[in-house]
Image (tube, rainbow, N blue to C red; front, side, top):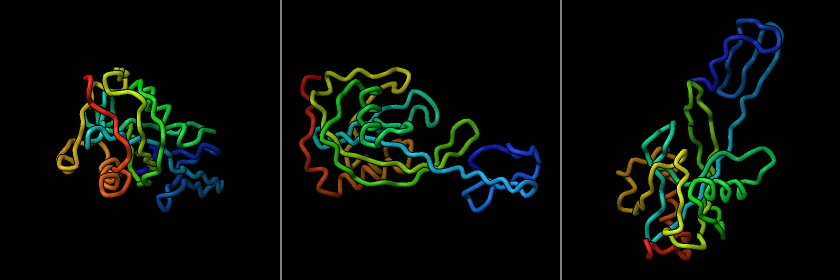
Length: 184
């Protein structure tokens, strides 16, 4: 799947616009080149009693499946700031103490466009318990905790999320202080 359903050159209107090397669009008529660069997302992994907080997506892509709190990095925004912002927007929780877990490539298919993404993951703590969580219903229908034992079978929306959570469980990041589910 190409990154965008473009058939005509945006400069000269030629219908010979070509997608090349999974990296760029090229017009042989006017030599215009457009690089459809990778989009960047940032997500947080919050450990709670040995499991990871996940949200049930309220919208496409992958509506109804599980994802980590996170989203796209805005122009002129640091990835760390995006991760904190997205966590607060989606859950009402303040993520802190971010530690980089890793990055993984992903295909994000949305409205007939396949966006190639580089997904960045940070472990984080939250200052309060899950009882203080307020989900944004436009983003998340519900939440659940996913343990390491459930990771391979849980309905996780993006393979990059699964890889990041696996890396989190396999490394010292899992030794971070965790939020408590007490008070739910």
